[in-house]
Length: 78
Image (cartoon, rainbow, N blue to C red; front, side, top):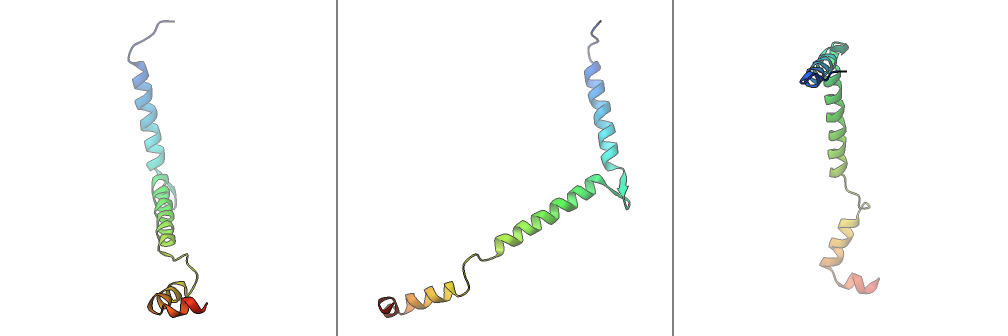
């Protein structure tokens, strides 16, 4: 079988065009697959950012430590 130079790039570009067209065509409720994926990524990222803002220390931990720093005698009593 003869090898034809340059045919591989044609197949690659054609496949790429087909995939881009398929992903950007309306799929569910007039939204494309790309839009659905972008929305899912934004929701996951917002949940991740929210989780980073939460405090993992127990309630009152900071207040107790500040009180002990302000009054060193409390440390010796305990």
